[in-house]
Length: 339
Image (tube, rainbow, N blue to C red; front, side, top):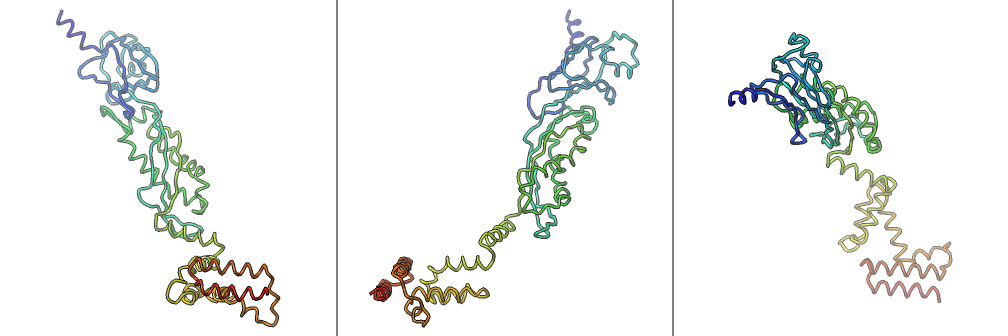
C-alpha cells in the first residue's frame, strides 16, 4: 500500500497557479522528478496564461479555462514527442504560468537633464516625468526574450529596462516636435501620445502591450527655472524699463531712510533708463508745489488739487520720507493758496 501511495505521488494530476503577489509576471510550475498524468487537469485563471515547453521549445499555449490534458488539447506537444493518437504513460514537460494583469502607475523620468535645441532659448536642459501602464500579452515572446527558464520573473527585474528606454527617447520626441519650451506645458498630452507610439514596438518585442503613457511634468533645472521666472516677471511688468521703474518705486521708502536718500536711488537704480531724473522731478513737484506753481503759465490751484497734495504729503510722513515739521510747513503753505 505504501508503495502504491509513493507511485501515485510521482504523478501530477492538477496543474494550477494561485498568484501570491502583484509583482510576479511568470512562474514555473514545480515539477522536480514528477511526471504529468495523462488526463491531468490544467486550470488557467482569468488574467493568466500557461505555456508548455518541451526541451527548451515553446509548445502549447493555454488561455483562461479548465483543460484535460490529452493529445487533443496538446497538439504541438504531441507532434514534438511523436505520440500516436493516444498516449497512456505519464510525460514530462516544463509548464510556465504568466500573469496578464495590467501593471499600472509605473514611474518613469529623466535621471539627468536632457539637452535640446529650443526655438526661444537656444540650447536648454529639460527634465520630464510621468507614468505608464502595460500588460503581458504574448507569453511565447516574453518567455523567449526575457524570462527564459528562470523559476520566476518579476516586474522589478524588467522595470529598469523599460524606464530607461522611455527616458532615452525623450530628447528625440522634443527635438522632432519643434515646440518651444514655453508651449510644452500645454502639449503634454500630445508628447505622451507621441512617446507611446515610439515605445510600442519595443514593448511588443518583449511580448508586452503598452496600454498608456503620460507625461506629467516638463521642467527646467532649478537654476534655469529661476532665470526664466525673472524673465517672465519682467515681461509681465511691460518690459525692462517698466520693470526698472517698478523696482525704483518699491525702493523709494527704503532709500529715503538711508544716507544719500532719493539722490542715491536716482543715481543708482535709474542708470541707463532715465529713471533717476523721472523720480527726482516727480518728488520735487510733490515736495515743493510752490516752486512748480511759480511758472508764469501755471494754472490756478483748485481746492481739490490742494487737498489731494496734502493727502499725498501726509502719506510720505507715514512712510518716513517727510518729517512732521516739514509736512506742517507745506500744509500751511498750501492752505494759504485757498485763502
